[in-house]
Every structure is written in structure tokens, then in C-alpha cells.
Length: 207
Image 1: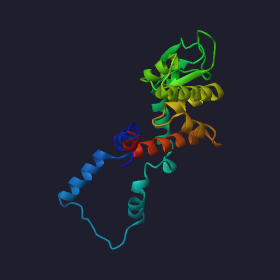
Image 2 (image 1 turned 45 degrees about the vertical axis):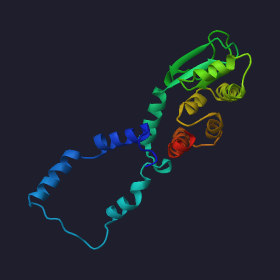
Image 3 (image 1 turned 30 degrees about the horizontal axis):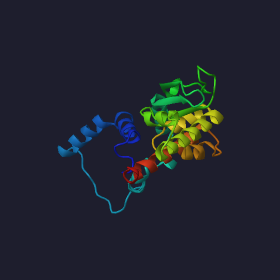
């Protein structure tokens, strides 16, 4: 329920319906039962499969149980998401690109700096806040947040860009995700999915 109406939920349902379930064969089976050609027997206890279905349904899309196909879907979605790159050194370079097209170590083509903030593609307010000569409290907060994001990108390159492109992942949570020790890349995306799921669950509170 926490993931409902999110891209992760839609992608998982689409993959389940088109790749995992035999929808046409199931329809044929139901037709056979309705025609009386196949008997349905009721047993007193749950079979192992039935017990598994009852206990695991709600946990199907939890990050800790997400299988390789779900992680792959999350990875592909993030690679296709857009991110706004903004140079905090010269403040003259600003470009919106897909995450997948970003270099391993982003660099400003105008001044050569690697202090590049990775922002939401629609976040023009933060760009304006950084450029403002005199800042109010909100602009100062946005500026500090942009510099934290740029510091992550400067230190961790594209990995930071990927984390910052995720839904509900700001510089603080991105740093926690990046600095966690892992055995493989899938764990990185699994941690991103965990944070996105938490954001989806508490989104109404933040909004």
C-alpha cells in the first residue's frame, strides 16, 4: 500500500502481469471450472503454497525482499530520470540531463570545476537562491542544501547523482546511502528503494 501510485509500484505490477503471470491460461482454467469439467476440492489445511501466499503477499515489494528484476527496474528508471546540474563555482553552467548521460565525474564545461550540484529538474528556485546577492532564510537554506549536494557529487561522482535523483532523497539521506558499506551494486539500489518506499509512506506528512 505504501508504494501504490508510485513508479516502483506501477513497474512491478506491469512486470507481474506481462512476464510472471499466465493470464490467458488462468482464464482458460477458470472457464473449465465454470463449465464443470474440473472439480474444485476444499481441504482443511493450507498447502505450503497457500501458506506462502498468505504470509508473503504484503511483503512482496518490501526492499529487503525485492528480487533482481525489481532492482533492475529501479536502476533503469533512475538512469532515465532527469537531473539538473548546476555549477556552484562559476554559477553560469546549468543543464538538465538524464542521469544515464551524466559522466562518472561531472565537470563544468565552462570553468572546469567539479563542484556541481545535482538538483531536481524543476528546481529553479534553488538556482535563483544560490545566485541571489542577498538571501532570505529560505534562500539561505536552499543554498546550503545545494552546496551539500555538490560536495557529494564532487566526492562520489555519478553515484551521488543517482542517489540524489531518487524520490525523497536529499543530500542528508543520499550521504547515508552512499557511505554504507556493501557487497554489490544491487545493495546500493536496494537502499535507494528503501528510502523511496519510506518517502512514499510519509509523503502526505511532508507535503
